[in-house]
Image (cartoon, rainbow, N blue to C red; front, side):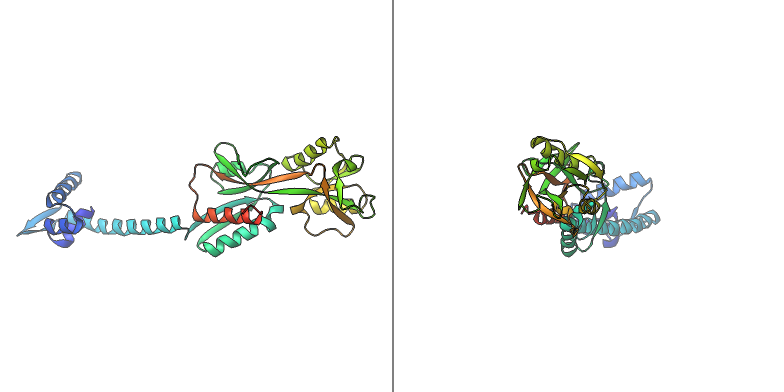
Length: 296
């Protein structure tokens, strides 16, 4: 149809061929194919040139519309590839928000202001289905501590290590261990414990470290968040472990100490789809996450 449009606007097959960079024979053959598909003549000879029939004029009009739409599509696609437009869907859990997600969002908005960022707070246990099924471009997940910067996810999801988030001992003020700079994990074996995690990879990180130290903690009370856990500790109900990212504002009734032999750690990863080519906005977001986590 674009060849028909060129012939109609130029007034001859030869002129259209010169404009398009084809031979006159090639243009004539394409017009013949189009007339066969349309089942009606599209051009009629006038002297040394041609002019469109009514059907030819009709299709030329549609060719104009299609040409504009193709040009708009090419521009839109170029903008998307360059990161000038688009959408980035991110899933994250609460304690990673301020330290990791906020600077990454700021980076993308500065470098790619036309990209829409969709943020959704999720449970850190299993956001991988959202990534795997295309509902999210990136998700922050917690996995047991391990070596390396990348790990295999599930069904084409790749995990990129961002940082290790160590657990710290939260003790009541006046506790016998509060005067130490660091606390050996085994020294908490006989203490009543305030649970700070629900079952899942975060709790698993605590339990694995305690097992390595030769005991299983005796939980006397459970809490839904780290702030509540600190309150229970301040009230003298027990001791607790809280990840560094989860401490936030510390309760005035507790002291916080580093833990050693071993140090409980949860590893935080960014989950992305393996098969999908990265976009400039996703690359920028991931780079900012790694920098915030100390990975670059």
